Length: 160
Image (cartoon, rainbow, N blue to C red; front, side):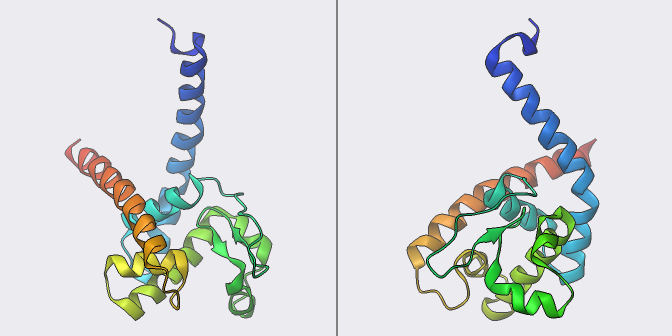
């Protein structure tokens, strides 16, 4: 049976084309971003998948504080003053490679504060000053699932 002849088959085929192409094109960016800030590239990808499902032009809703999350790593605009001083503009966050590097920077700052722990991953989501442990736990559980899946994929690739 031709997979593209069924509606669900067409959807799956489209997702494979979109995400398969995106993951190939971004592999170097993920690895470069992770190396730049000494973070696990598989963890960085898992966070990116949770945040935006790989869409580089993703934009979150405007939050009560007026900020919003932008790009594949859903970088909160609260970081823009610091990023602007580094030459990174709001629109630059829609570039997947830039977003991945900034995401690695945010994660590295959380790791610096909390150590290489899942608490640091929760910090990525809620910010370092947050006391919303429930939100952090939900986020971490989701990222852990994606992390495990990416680890399995990486192990399969190494066996080839």
